[in-house]
Image (cartoon, rainbow over all chains, first blue to last red; front, side):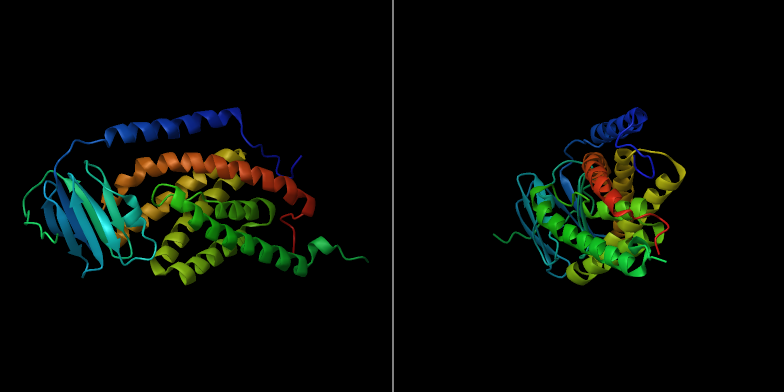
Length: 125
Length: 174
């Protein structure tokens, strides 16, 4: 018997665990959006540009520290100066309620259906 | 009178050194393992050390370990990672001590809730850093991941505490 008498798992744990799992699935269901077709790029909380996901090409943001690639109706970070590369490993996003965050570069990319301020993409290739 | 070796300051210092070493090692191991997991998800193995400290040593020691672990992250992985580690660590530590002191909750539930607290702290800090609420889109993925990793760390914590008991580390150590 341990000094604090705690158990590994109890029957009463099942309810909170079940609630956590159901909330997860509920949110996953609620957050599965349609395909809006635009990407909004925020730096330091400000919208710096919007681009259409129908285009293909690269966008350099945060003073050239981050390279975003738009292809096949999605967007992903293809290169970043940050140490962790979490943004690169997030991979491609293409539907609503998805975002890519790069904390060291204070960058956030989200999908949106709003095409106001949409600029033409700089096609590098 | 014979001195009880388990109640000396030297013993306490040695135990804290070993625990900090374990926390740091697990932090390194975790960042290696995280390349096999979806982006940003970590197992939270080093949190096992913090929960062990709360359970088997005492609360101030657990806080010191949380702070020193984040200092290590700050020195090795930069300011952002260090701040994220500290913020998540403090949230997880707070929830752990509240559950430990106020409830008789099991280890599994305690570590699942600590994992959720950890990610809540990090997402809130991410909101502050990016000055945007859209980082919260990560909630569903991280909530599910927290439940899974929390169960794993709960099992590890339980296994560790079986052996820690042999060391007779109690809250009255000093």
